[in-house]
Image 1 (cartoon, rainbow, N blue to C red):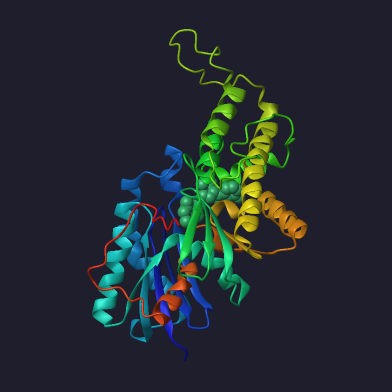
Image 2 (cartoon, rainbow, N blue to C red):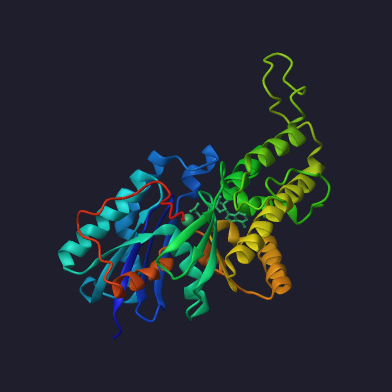
Length: 350
Ligand code: KG4
Ligand code: ZN
């Protein structure tokens, strides 16, 4: 039997484990989502997330091994996402991984969650895809990378405020849509006119590779609840009720989505030109969005570049994308038991 490794992912609010073989075949991939636990708060509550990871991590690992028909003794290595993410959540996965690696006496591999999001494209392609521009669009990140290879992505652009997925989640909350916001907005937007509202597109014509979504979010707030003049008469607080008829909400969703995607597409285009890459790899939860996928395909066709978008099941957080751990093992990048989590984004700026 070819070697297999166990990968563990607990960076945010998904508890996940996967078994991946050396040929990068995913033998099993189990994801326990915590969406139901965070829904009523409209976003991830870190303490609730880490407690849920503690309860779920062992059953999720067991299930991944069972589905792959693999015993602990068969594992050639244990991989775990160690950065970036919520500190308490990361620690649960790392502690489980360290324990298994120590007991089984196999290499421990510390995975960068963002590099893994990009690597999901490599796994989907079934062949080498580097060098490439890597683009990670998720609830925590809107990051562009120049990737000479799989394991050394160099950060070339990111958001200065909200991540694009975070903007989807906040706008969804404003429109009274269920959490997580991305899929809800996408569904509503299908019935709307993307040109009905002209929302701001920050840095669109700028030659920086940065993003900003807080102005867009505020513009949606004003469109929906009225401008600051539209305050509650008694408290003076911003109107909490809709100032807009309910039937206009699909137009708001479609116009918001298109404004956000105009910027994502423009910056991908700029990155490809500035770094002269022929391949664009896109991953992260927002890349599950059908409209974004369509716009990326249009861009790739216009520019004659190769586009690889992770399949939807590998866009949102999962452990299978940690197949990148085989690359770490091949390069001798083995972690010792002293390795710690790194909650913040690790910048590999020029
Ligand atoms: O990659 P991910 O699972 O977790 C992070 O690392 O953040 O991404 C989750 C984010 C959430 O903000 C969610 O609203 C967004 O991805 N998302 C979407 C869609 N599906 C998930 N955004 C837009 N359209 C979607 N279909
Ligand atoms: Zn992620």
